[in-house]
Amino acid sequence: MRWVRIAIVGVFALAAASAALAGTLASPRGAEPAAVSDPPVLSATAEIRRMFMKPGQFAVAVTNGGDASVRVLSAEVVTDSFAPLGVQEFDTEVPPYAAARDLFVQYGDARCPDGTASIADPASVILEVETQDQAVHTVTLELSHPNGTLDRLIREACAAKAVAASARIELGELAAAADGTLEGRLKVTPLGEAALDVSEVRGSVLFEIRAEASEPLEGGGVSVPLMFDAHRCDGHVVGDAKHPFGFTAWIVIDGGEPVATPIDVQEDRREALWAMLDARCAERE
Image (cartoon, rainbow, N blue to C red; front, side, top):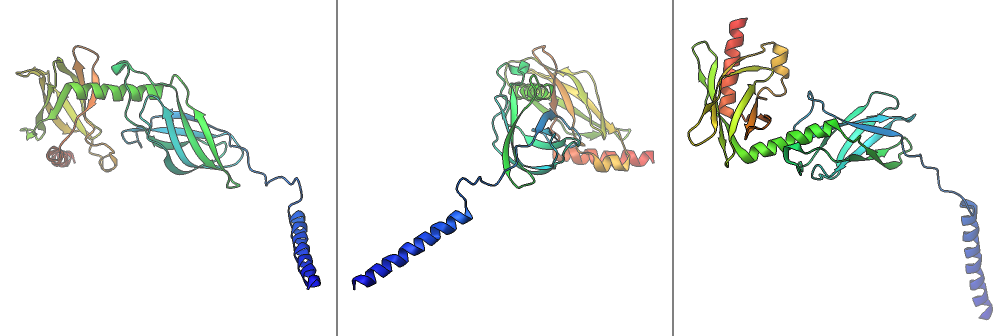
Protein backbone atom coordinates (compact mmCIF):
# COMPACT_ATOMS: atom_id res chain seq x y z
CA MET A 1 0.00 0.00 0.00
CA ARG A 2 2.99 2.23 0.34
CA TRP A 3 3.06 2.91 -3.41
CA VAL A 4 -0.59 4.02 -3.25
CA ARG A 5 0.20 6.60 -0.57
CA ILE A 6 3.14 7.86 -2.63
CA ALA A 7 0.90 8.23 -5.68
CA ILE A 8 -1.71 10.23 -3.76
CA VAL A 9 0.91 12.58 -2.34
CA GLY A 10 2.29 13.03 -5.84
CA VAL A 11 -1.11 13.97 -7.24
CA PHE A 12 -1.61 16.67 -4.56
CA ALA A 13 1.89 18.05 -5.13
CA LEU A 14 1.27 18.22 -8.87
CA ALA A 15 -2.06 20.03 -8.34
CA ALA A 16 -0.43 22.56 -6.01
CA ALA A 17 2.36 23.22 -8.46
CA SER A 18 -0.12 23.68 -11.31
CA ALA A 19 -2.14 26.16 -9.28
CA ALA A 20 0.98 28.11 -8.36
CA LEU A 21 2.06 28.23 -12.00
CA ALA A 22 -1.38 29.37 -13.12
CA GLY A 23 -1.36 32.11 -10.49
CA THR A 24 2.05 33.25 -11.63
CA LEU A 25 0.94 33.43 -15.24
CA ALA A 26 -2.26 35.28 -14.35
CA SER A 27 -0.58 37.77 -11.98
CA PRO A 28 3.11 38.19 -12.77
CA ARG A 29 5.29 39.00 -9.79
CA GLY A 30 5.57 42.74 -9.25
CA ALA A 31 2.53 43.64 -11.42
CA GLU A 32 1.03 47.05 -10.53
CA PRO A 33 -2.74 47.48 -9.76
CA ALA A 34 -4.95 49.04 -12.42
CA ALA A 35 -4.36 52.76 -12.80
CA VAL A 36 -6.80 55.13 -11.02
CA SER A 37 -7.46 58.71 -12.11
CA ASP A 38 -5.92 61.63 -10.24
CA PRO A 39 -8.20 63.76 -8.07
CA PRO A 40 -10.01 66.35 -10.21
CA VAL A 41 -8.96 69.99 -10.21
CA LEU A 42 -11.88 71.84 -8.61
CA SER A 43 -12.45 75.19 -6.92
CA ALA A 44 -15.43 76.67 -5.09
CA THR A 45 -16.93 79.94 -3.92
CA ALA A 46 -19.82 80.73 -1.57
CA GLU A 47 -22.71 82.54 -3.22
CA ILE A 48 -26.24 83.77 -2.46
CA ARG A 49 -28.80 83.11 -5.20
CA ARG A 50 -31.92 84.87 -3.96
CA MET A 51 -34.04 83.63 -6.87
CA PHE A 52 -33.59 79.95 -6.07
CA MET A 53 -32.60 79.59 -2.45
CA LYS A 54 -34.56 78.67 0.64
CA PRO A 55 -33.83 80.00 4.13
CA GLY A 56 -30.91 78.27 5.81
CA GLN A 57 -28.88 77.52 2.69
CA PHE A 58 -26.28 79.02 0.41
CA ALA A 59 -24.79 78.02 -2.93
CA VAL A 60 -21.38 76.40 -3.22
CA ALA A 61 -20.42 77.26 -6.81
CA VAL A 62 -18.04 74.52 -8.04
CA THR A 63 -15.77 75.08 -11.04
CA ASN A 64 -14.02 72.21 -12.82
CA GLY A 65 -10.52 73.14 -14.02
CA GLY A 66 -9.75 69.68 -15.43
CA ASP A 67 -10.33 68.19 -18.88
CA ALA A 68 -13.21 65.81 -18.08
CA SER A 69 -16.58 66.00 -16.35
CA VAL A 70 -16.96 64.88 -12.76
CA ARG A 71 -20.06 64.04 -10.74
CA VAL A 72 -20.50 65.41 -7.22
CA LEU A 73 -21.98 62.75 -4.96
CA SER A 74 -21.98 64.58 -1.63
CA ALA A 75 -20.89 67.76 0.14
CA GLU A 76 -20.15 68.66 3.74
CA VAL A 77 -19.68 72.21 5.04
CA VAL A 78 -16.97 72.48 7.69
CA THR A 79 -16.72 75.69 9.75
CA ASP A 80 -16.93 76.84 13.35
CA SER A 81 -19.49 79.49 12.40
CA PHE A 82 -22.41 77.09 11.91
CA ALA A 83 -23.43 73.91 13.70
CA PRO A 84 -22.42 70.89 11.57
CA LEU A 85 -25.14 69.14 9.56
CA GLY A 86 -22.96 66.33 8.21
CA VAL A 87 -22.83 64.96 4.69
CA GLN A 88 -25.47 66.13 2.20
CA GLU A 89 -26.10 64.00 -0.87
CA PHE A 90 -25.98 65.34 -4.44
CA ASP A 91 -25.97 64.03 -7.99
CA THR A 92 -24.59 66.97 -9.92
CA GLU A 93 -22.39 66.88 -13.01
CA VAL A 94 -19.71 69.53 -13.30
CA PRO A 95 -18.36 69.84 -16.87
CA PRO A 96 -14.80 71.06 -17.51
CA TYR A 97 -14.10 74.70 -18.32
CA ALA A 98 -17.76 75.68 -18.11
CA ALA A 99 -19.82 77.91 -15.85
CA ALA A 100 -19.76 76.94 -12.18
CA ARG A 101 -22.39 74.48 -10.98
CA ASP A 102 -24.28 75.40 -7.81
CA LEU A 103 -24.68 73.00 -4.90
CA PHE A 104 -27.36 74.41 -2.61
CA VAL A 105 -26.11 73.32 0.81
CA GLN A 106 -27.89 73.65 4.12
CA TYR A 107 -26.08 75.29 7.04
CA GLY A 108 -26.68 74.74 10.73
CA ASP A 109 -27.48 77.04 13.62
CA ALA A 110 -25.30 80.15 13.62
CA ARG A 111 -22.75 80.63 16.39
CA CYS A 112 -22.54 84.24 17.54
CA PRO A 113 -19.57 84.79 19.87
CA ASP A 114 -19.71 88.56 19.30
CA GLY A 115 -23.48 88.89 19.01
CA THR A 116 -24.67 90.84 15.99
CA ALA A 117 -21.05 91.87 15.29
CA SER A 118 -19.95 88.25 14.71
CA ILE A 119 -18.11 87.43 11.48
CA ALA A 120 -17.55 84.12 9.72
CA ASP A 121 -14.68 81.81 10.63
CA PRO A 122 -12.69 80.00 7.91
CA ALA A 123 -14.80 77.44 6.04
CA SER A 124 -14.25 74.56 3.64
CA VAL A 125 -16.41 72.13 1.71
CA ILE A 126 -15.56 68.42 1.53
CA LEU A 127 -16.79 66.86 -1.73
CA GLU A 128 -17.08 63.22 -2.73
CA VAL A 129 -16.72 63.22 -6.53
CA GLU A 130 -16.76 60.48 -9.14
CA THR A 131 -14.49 60.73 -12.18
CA GLN A 132 -15.14 59.15 -15.57
CA ASP A 133 -13.29 55.93 -14.65
CA GLN A 134 -15.84 55.57 -11.79
CA ALA A 135 -13.19 56.22 -9.17
CA VAL A 136 -14.47 58.18 -6.16
CA HIS A 137 -12.26 60.93 -4.73
CA THR A 138 -12.53 63.04 -1.59
CA VAL A 139 -11.70 66.66 -2.38
CA THR A 140 -11.49 69.43 0.22
CA LEU A 141 -12.09 72.92 -1.15
CA GLU A 142 -11.22 75.94 0.98
CA LEU A 143 -13.59 78.88 0.70
CA SER A 144 -12.00 82.32 0.63
CA HIS A 145 -11.49 84.05 3.98
CA PRO A 146 -12.57 86.68 4.87
CA ASN A 147 -15.77 85.72 3.06
CA GLY A 148 -18.40 88.38 2.38
CA THR A 149 -21.14 85.85 1.66
CA LEU A 150 -20.65 83.91 4.89
CA ASP A 151 -20.22 87.14 6.86
CA ARG A 152 -23.60 88.29 5.56
CA LEU A 153 -25.26 85.00 6.51
CA ILE A 154 -23.74 85.15 9.99
CA ARG A 155 -24.83 88.76 10.51
CA GLU A 156 -28.38 87.99 9.41
CA ALA A 157 -28.63 84.85 11.53
CA CYS A 158 -27.14 86.48 14.63
CA ALA A 159 -29.37 89.52 14.21
CA ALA A 160 -32.41 87.25 13.97
CA LYS A 161 -31.31 85.55 17.21
CA ALA A 162 -30.95 88.91 18.94
CA VAL A 163 -34.43 90.00 17.84
CA ALA A 164 -35.99 86.65 18.79
CA ALA A 165 -34.49 86.96 22.26
CA SER A 166 -35.68 90.55 22.72
CA ALA A 167 -39.02 91.02 20.96
CA ARG A 168 -42.31 89.45 19.97
CA ILE A 169 -43.42 90.59 16.50
CA GLU A 170 -47.07 90.15 15.54
CA LEU A 171 -49.05 91.23 12.49
CA GLY A 172 -52.56 91.99 13.69
CA GLU A 173 -55.85 91.36 11.90
CA LEU A 174 -56.34 93.07 8.55
CA ALA A 175 -59.42 95.12 7.75
CA ALA A 176 -60.65 96.51 4.42
CA ALA A 177 -60.31 100.27 3.94
CA ALA A 178 -62.75 102.41 1.93
CA ASP A 179 -60.47 102.37 -1.14
CA GLY A 180 -60.15 98.57 -1.20
CA THR A 181 -56.73 98.37 0.43
CA LEU A 182 -56.13 96.63 3.75
CA GLU A 183 -55.21 98.18 7.07
CA GLY A 184 -53.50 96.55 10.00
CA ARG A 185 -50.93 97.00 12.74
CA LEU A 186 -47.55 95.52 13.48
CA LYS A 187 -47.01 95.10 17.22
CA VAL A 188 -43.49 94.75 18.61
CA THR A 189 -43.43 93.98 22.33
CA PRO A 190 -40.38 93.35 24.54
CA LEU A 191 -39.54 89.95 26.01
CA GLY A 192 -37.19 91.58 28.49
CA GLU A 193 -36.05 95.07 29.38
CA ALA A 194 -34.85 96.19 25.93
CA ALA A 195 -36.26 99.39 24.42
CA LEU A 196 -37.74 98.62 21.01
CA ASP A 197 -38.71 100.59 17.91
CA VAL A 198 -39.39 99.99 14.21
CA SER A 199 -37.50 102.10 11.68
CA GLU A 200 -38.94 100.68 8.44
CA VAL A 201 -41.38 98.10 7.04
CA ARG A 202 -41.20 96.76 3.47
CA GLY A 203 -43.55 94.64 1.41
CA SER A 204 -42.83 91.99 -1.21
CA VAL A 205 -42.81 91.68 -4.99
CA LEU A 206 -46.63 91.46 -4.93
CA PHE A 207 -47.67 93.62 -2.00
CA GLU A 208 -46.83 97.23 -1.19
CA ILE A 209 -46.72 98.25 2.46
CA ARG A 210 -46.92 101.85 3.65
CA ALA A 211 -46.02 102.31 7.30
CA GLU A 212 -46.83 105.28 9.50
CA ALA A 213 -44.77 106.42 12.50
CA SER A 214 -44.59 103.92 15.34
CA GLU A 215 -46.71 104.52 18.42
CA PRO A 216 -45.67 103.50 21.95
CA LEU A 217 -47.58 100.71 23.62
CA GLU A 218 -48.54 100.69 27.27
CA GLY A 219 -46.12 98.39 29.03
CA GLY A 220 -43.39 98.81 26.43
CA GLY A 221 -42.90 98.22 22.74
CA VAL A 222 -44.49 99.92 19.77
CA SER A 223 -47.37 99.56 17.34
CA VAL A 224 -46.96 100.53 13.67
CA PRO A 225 -50.06 101.31 11.52
CA LEU A 226 -49.74 99.64 8.11
CA MET A 227 -51.56 99.91 4.78
CA PHE A 228 -51.37 97.05 2.26
CA ASP A 229 -51.97 97.44 -1.48
CA ALA A 230 -51.32 95.45 -4.66
CA HIS A 231 -47.83 96.17 -5.98
CA ARG A 232 -47.69 93.99 -9.10
CA CYS A 233 -50.55 92.46 -11.08
CA ASP A 234 -48.65 90.87 -13.99
CA GLY A 235 -49.85 87.31 -14.37
CA HIS A 236 -46.35 85.84 -14.71
CA VAL A 237 -45.14 87.78 -11.66
CA VAL A 238 -48.06 86.62 -9.52
CA GLY A 239 -47.66 83.03 -10.68
CA ASP A 240 -43.89 82.91 -10.24
CA ALA A 241 -43.56 84.79 -6.94
CA LYS A 242 -41.34 82.71 -4.65
CA HIS A 243 -42.05 84.68 -1.48
CA PRO A 244 -45.31 86.60 -1.91
CA PHE A 245 -45.46 87.29 1.84
CA GLY A 246 -41.78 88.06 2.33
CA PHE A 247 -42.46 91.16 4.44
CA THR A 248 -39.61 92.68 6.45
CA ALA A 249 -39.45 94.98 9.47
CA TRP A 250 -36.31 96.75 10.71
CA ILE A 251 -36.25 96.46 14.50
CA VAL A 252 -34.21 98.83 16.65
CA ILE A 253 -33.03 97.35 19.98
CA ASP A 254 -31.83 99.78 22.66
CA GLY A 255 -31.10 102.43 20.05
CA GLY A 256 -28.72 100.22 18.06
CA GLU A 257 -28.51 99.61 14.33
CA PRO A 258 -31.84 98.48 12.79
CA VAL A 259 -32.03 94.71 12.29
CA ALA A 260 -33.93 93.31 9.30
CA THR A 261 -36.46 90.75 10.53
CA PRO A 262 -39.04 88.73 8.57
CA ILE A 263 -42.69 89.24 9.52
CA ASP A 264 -44.72 86.08 10.07
CA VAL A 265 -48.02 86.29 8.15
CA GLN A 266 -50.70 83.98 9.53
CA GLU A 267 -52.97 82.04 7.20
CA ASP A 268 -56.08 84.21 7.65
CA ARG A 269 -54.00 87.32 6.87
CA ARG A 270 -52.67 85.62 3.73
CA GLU A 271 -56.19 84.84 2.54
CA ALA A 272 -57.22 88.47 3.08
CA LEU A 273 -54.18 89.69 1.14
CA TRP A 274 -54.85 87.33 -1.79
CA ALA A 275 -58.46 88.50 -1.94
CA MET A 276 -57.37 92.16 -1.87
CA LEU A 277 -54.80 91.50 -4.61
CA ASP A 278 -57.41 89.88 -6.85
CA ALA A 279 -59.85 92.75 -6.35
CA ARG A 280 -57.31 95.54 -6.80
CA CYS A 281 -55.79 93.96 -9.88
CA ALA A 282 -59.24 93.48 -11.41
CA GLU A 283 -59.87 97.22 -10.95
CA ARG A 284 -56.72 98.01 -12.93
CA GLU A 285 -57.61 95.87 -15.96
